[in-house]
Image (cartoon, rainbow, N blue to C red; front, side, top):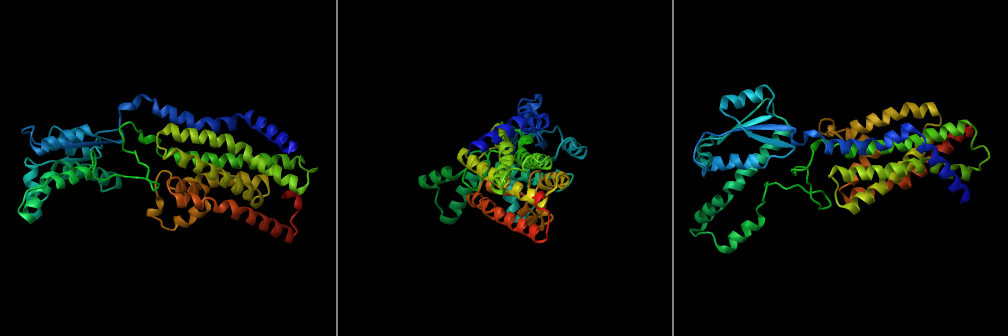
Length: 386
């Protein structure tokens, strides 16, 4: 035990004196702080134009336009276009992601739509894509929010011939959403505040980026282990001692990286429940340790692991849903995610079942590592490289 403590201190001091490791360790927290306190706090990712003909302020289309402007946040900002021509020009030249042209009588147009199927409002966009479809949901939910009570009153009167009762009005108010009709939640029941006003969308991919950097910290430990092994530093250790020291080489860089990673997640403002974040991070660090220990045997030479690092880093960013979910275009990528710890982590963040699945590699990979060692020895691979 005393020997392991000595090894732990020596490895830790060595890592803390390595400027590249320290830079990698502090990279994501510094990025988050820079994004959160950047001067562009008032800008947004998507600008959306709205045109409404001039009219009385108490009309529904006028109220809707003001409601959309008021609902603007960092992800989406609505603004009033001076004319229909200006709106189309803004969309064409890329100043607006899309635009919405409201009719002079929105209420009448919506009522007429059920019989004539004549569009109640026009949507202008360069191309049909996911981000503009999300904006559609925001606009349509605002329309629903403005007119839902009147629609309910008319529906009840048509069906029963009576006016809405106090109990029915109370139920309506209970289930009506205050901001948008569609509400998002994580699988564990915690709220998803991606569209809240103080949320900077630029920080959203940082969870996946942080997970990749944590994986790289474990692979850094593998490099240090190979370097010292090549210098005959473990020659006097028994097999059991060598294995224990090997785990320390992986654990020591992963622990401070995990602390920085967890700090980064909370700095972004996108965490789920704190206990879920902490538990998932613990499981992920265990996954990294056993995964990198397996890689240490799978790639028994320093040159091999050096070549593998960029492959795993880039592959994790591509295969895992860090920036976008490419499995929607290439369904076969779902199978590739089974071999990337980053995907295990992203799946387990907001799901109890996902967190339980993160424990599977902790038990399976050590067994595979033992079997792989036996295969190497079976083919008379030099035991020194293991």
